[in-house]
Image 1 (cartoon, rainbow, N blue to C red):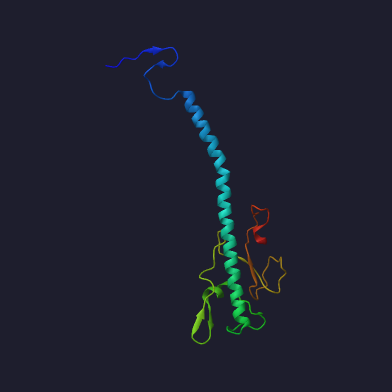
Image 2 (tube, rainbow, N blue to C red):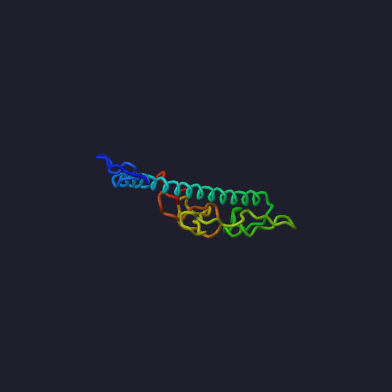
Length: 160
């Protein structure tokens, strides 16, 4: 049988464990580290969404440009007065006939706006003002996010 001696400094000399003060200090340190990590995690999520928004806008704008390029070369049929731009985003997904036996699609799907959570994008036609928030309904010259939130760099997502 093991015997323990009492000492004045630590109580029983063979005892292992943490004191209440040590537990409070350790918990305090963990709380401080957790509160410091929260803003970092929030900003990393925002950066990821901003990168996704930027990538989606580039993808759709490139699809519009490819459609316009084929229309300018008279490889696809366009409506008179459309100036060679697609009538809507769905046309880029559904595709258009090229030649007599082929159909070309420019997008697999209309991406979801990561800022609004919907596949509803703001559209501009050639006839609209560059900063217009309403679509003339004739053709799609440009796309933008309908989110009115502000990006980490201070700009509005709708201005991207």
